Length: 121
Image 1: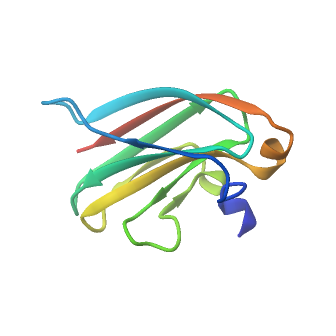
Image 2: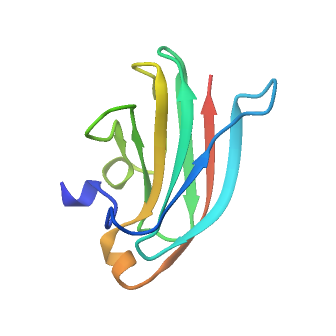
């Protein structure tokens, strides 16, 4: 499943803990990635809650994956499913939303400017 994983795991990874402001359950981020770099957004969620993630990007080879705590494989794979996810959280813990460029774009050193919206209700 080479298409389902980011271009390279050993390359620069930025981690952004997601915290919602009091009384809110959603947050929007704007950032960019270049080449093999990735950004991991970490979100604490409880079993039964619904997580919704939407990515708008300037690069058609930019996607995101959602991974459950302790999982070996992604719960959602953007490169095969698209840039919107909504689903019930199967277990409590810290989930990771990883934004990345596919290898074809990363190899060429392309950039993706993106907006990422994350909600947990």
